[in-house]
Length: 193
Image (cartoon, rainbow, N blue to C red; front, side, top):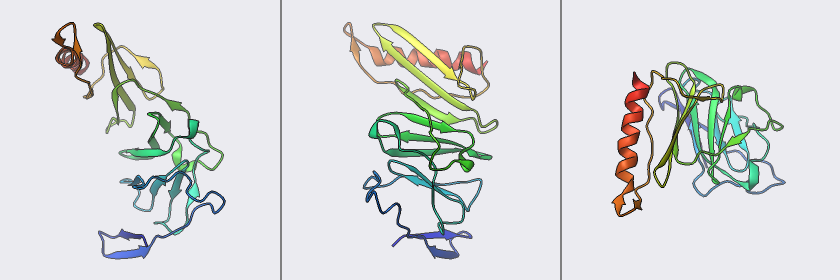
């Protein structure tokens, strides 16, 4: 049995619910990701092969998407501070799907995927814009892309911090990972100007 607490845990309600009986597991993982919306304490997101949303503290659930692409299941959620409709979802196949009108989505809504190489996706807490920082290294060739909230690549400076995940690899006898970290640091400084 699942319980949903509100009013700082003073009140609890039974949030057990069954999803579509025609698809027994709906791709739900053993440990199913979920997120409570910090902007709206009535809203909770969860999912398997589909994204599910409740707007009434778990009393009623609605499917908020078509099936995830390529048979993937949901592994992570992110919600922009100050904007409950701006939602990111990570999938088991490495895709990220985004919807800026997520509170209005239904079972026929298709969330379009993108697949970063190596990166960190986050929201700008002031503007709600999506930031994607990625670095890919192949024999010293580096790419760094910032994707703005309009989905277009930006090369100009931004006034936010972007963290970058890098992998440590050996290349030509040296430690390639340290080179990536140094270059990421230079990019970060350039972006903060």
